[in-house]
Length: 195
Image (cartoon, helix red, strand yellow):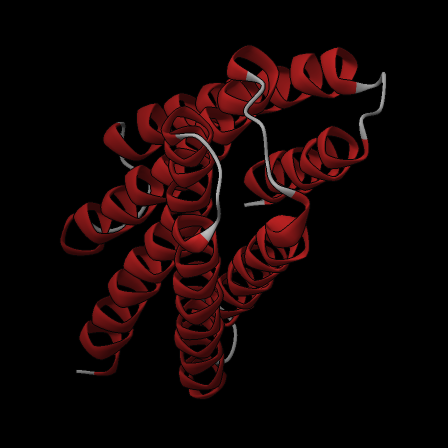
């Protein structure tokens, strides 16, 4: 969880720097790649430990599913970093704030997910509140994403610019969507643990 969060924070920094035209893009891009690779290594290590007997068999599958879906969040964040560092899309000034807001909501959703997972093992009664927070932040991100796309396609700019910006906007939205997918899995695990 911590390593995925670090990856998201790094990609958010990369996005801010990219939109400001900073020289730090390559450094942040390399850091994002390194963090995502570290998250992958931790995932594989955890999976090996679980397959070798950690946790009860009936709970193991649920945890492995959570870990796999968490990895998809980190993968999508790395993809956003790829778009920024490799494609260098032109983002019209009129939507820059919306794109930053999208990423902010995606990060907030993930941090709420992190709390839900923490309490899944400590105080199950608190998990539901954080799951609802994830849903709220994901919904807010959806609204901002639609607004950004609407503005983008109303602009008088070339199709290539629109399509590149659209891919970035959608990919940032996918981070929040994948976070919500993990949150849905947390809800299922919570229900199973209660019964």
